[in-house]
Image 1: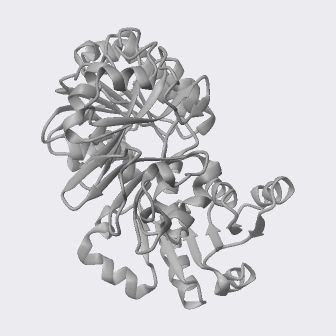
Image 2: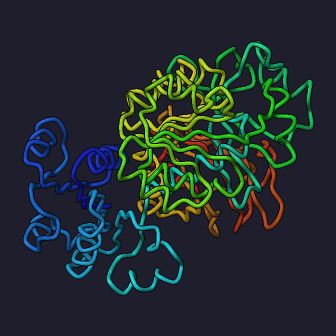
Length: 446
């Protein structure tokens, strides 16, 4: 696929590098000459310096032959104009990053389609939705729901007291033969494995599990986890993620939001109806104690500084807060952040990539998530007529290394994938996939 990416920093570059790994032809357009020089000297990407709203620049990027144009600059107006121009110049599909949530309303979709913008993405809103979802299932580090929760992927960190520790998958299945969940990956010491029957669970493993709704209780017991009742939440950072998160939670939880900028604090106080907005520096530990950080059930740090977010969450843990969530934009920090005790990491670049990858696939992808902390994706795909996955039971499909089928949704029913299960046309299939197998998914489902 020929893909043109217009960006002005890390998000565009990250997308370009990730999509290039999947053998797409990538051209990146960026106004920063230094970044373009770096891209040109260290990668095989085609790089062009310039303004993506320039017809000449887009023509130089050969947008007329683009299967997909992605515009992810920080300015949403630039992204909308870039997508609209690109469509007029021949791009088959266009995606624009936006900040204004009003644009995402269903009644506005036709307006943007008529302008030439096929899809809109707001990474900050996706991040806020992830945070809200995590506070509903507090025992998990990461959650991805499929088909309105008929199946879910849970990421669980195994503590010393977890009953499955030092047991193999075969041991667990023999002891609990009727489980409504399945482990699809284990992340240990910065390595990710797709487990076989004789692989053993160990303390501090990050275990990725596909579960049916009825299996969540047993999953929590075997992982040694208890649900935390969340009532009081402290949010640090009143940017778009913090504001959107508070808006989603304020009608059901008690929210305190810290914002260091006085003018922004005033705007937040006017915008949020049931959130206590505090103008102050969350790095001031005395202030945090005065505002009862010890009484918080959850602490969410979403400032523009990854370092501040990490340190704030560590302080919150020190004061006894049970649930910590940090926005970490530096991907290199994610692994170490989880190792030092932060419960959940949110990353907007990964959220953006999750949304965009589905547009690069021939198979019908109804949901996809690039996972935090590991280089892997979990996706829900529809089994097309005569696709390979419908020809034989799962155990006879000879799935490529790095790919595992976790579950199947058929109508209103969901099933955990077992060897003798036969996938049928129209089934929604949840697949966990490491990078080396992503390009093979299309062959199975298209």
